[in-house]
Amino acid sequence: QVQLVESGGGLVQAGGSLRLSCAASGSIFSINVMGWYRQAPGKQRELVASITKGGRANYANSMKGRFTISSDNAKNTVYLQMNSLKPEDTAVYYCAADRATVPVIWDYWGKGTLVTVSS
Image (tube, rainbow, N blue to C red; front, side):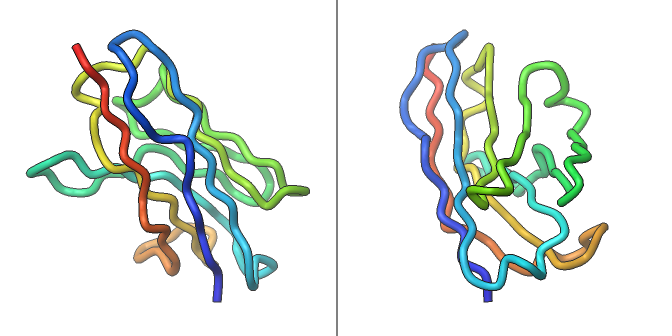
């Protein structure tokens, strides 16, 4: 089992920045990819970005340029740096992890952290 704990969410004004963190624990040796999803009120959960154990990052097209995913393998932590935030970025952001290289259904999920962007 793998446990994921997100932190770093909060209230920020439009144009501001936040950095989310996801700390992984447990059987982390089995994990090949970690990612961030978000779910806005009334909308489906969507992929924000993912990063492989080797450090290769992938972004949803709409997130490119403003969001950056990174990892610190020594700390078993994945980060999501979010810049130039917009009110439409308001959502619960979830950390996910998977044993597959290309996840279809992610194995593990955190409980989420709320990001609220005010206009």
